[in-house]
Length: 73
Image (cartoon, rainbow, N blue to C red; front, top):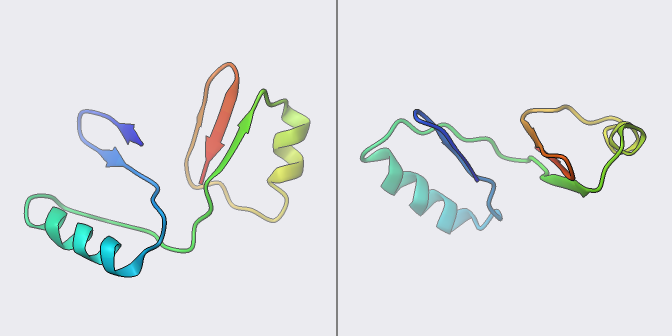
């Protein structure tokens, strides 16, 4: 989950009915955009060579990193 003053981003399992219900509920109050077919990857205690190896043939859509964890989808 990622929050800011103007956006809220989540990555959830793809239960089609539950996701559709959630989107329908959120669209009553908010502008909603969503992507399907993405993969969330998290690497703990990463180094650049590990990121490079895991990212082969993948497109980075979003990422967040801390001193010990790198996550993206």
